Length: 422
Image (cartoon, rainbow, N blue to C red; front, side, top):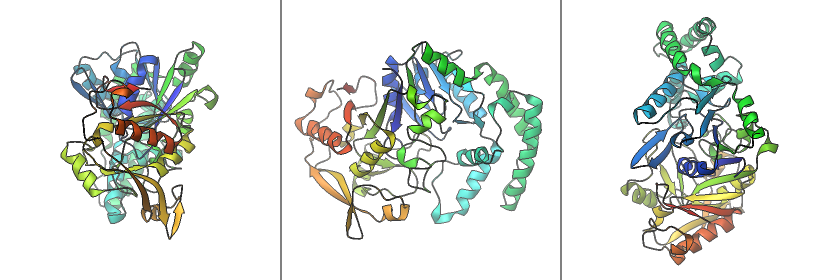
């Protein structure tokens, strides 16, 4: 498999958790490069459902090493809870997990600020998970953040925390919010530090040593292309680079050590939170929700649903350098007929082949659709391409043509067995 980056080619929630889990059979090291515990990767295995927020999905497989890279923002309390929850489920977590000493910390004042800013934006809200991810990245960019390496030095951490807590409490009081208690935070975070200490390492060196030993690395992306801080539907984006380039900056593995990029996309389109979604369709949303599908793994919020947007995914393939496509949730369309595909946008009388940079303009784009017949039967038991209905195969082929990349994986259900390799 060599070294592979897996990215979401839409607005997140594409089913990356399952595809990562499937690909880990040929990977030795699974690396998380950005985001925080605002991500949620769902994996169904052995009759159990696991939802992972910080720990890479490869943790469910024996003999794999999982790495949380320098580009991730880590809430130590959340990470400790996730480790303990997995241990209670019978998983062994020891030398198979490494955490970068350069990763930045998410602290209680980040969550408080996140919530207050979201509350005060009213109708212009972003739709944040209120996990403090944005404010943590803001501190990182402002060069005032605290890192895992600080947490490993109790006296230094307490001193830095006190100064930052005092500064942010002034802001919180000005916003009419409750101040954060320094002593309480200091105590709980140092307790978490004790539990996390065995996992902390220079992960850049570890990853380069793994490459020298010819280990296969799999880079696990969080969120999706159009939530990228630079290339997404700004300002309705996350605070990190969710595109393929973020895998290098967030881990210290250079681009010339990457062999392929796999893009994950649903057979339709979804989005959680605010922001433009050109192909959004209320009837399709209602249908999928009635089937118990499309609820956020992190927030539980109902996802907004729409038809497959080939304009957006083609642009995602361009930005990420996608070599192969994994199509997920194909079975979600088993009862839909006809099926629509957005092949272009119309804005102010002009046809567009790429998404406009401006979010307002994108929100005003009228999708141009082509229709294909549905297949009106279950696909969930198919083990190979030839077992899919002809209409399903035609639909998959069309998505590959429109996106401009090879379809290599099709998912027809949540379990590992419900995966077709092409």
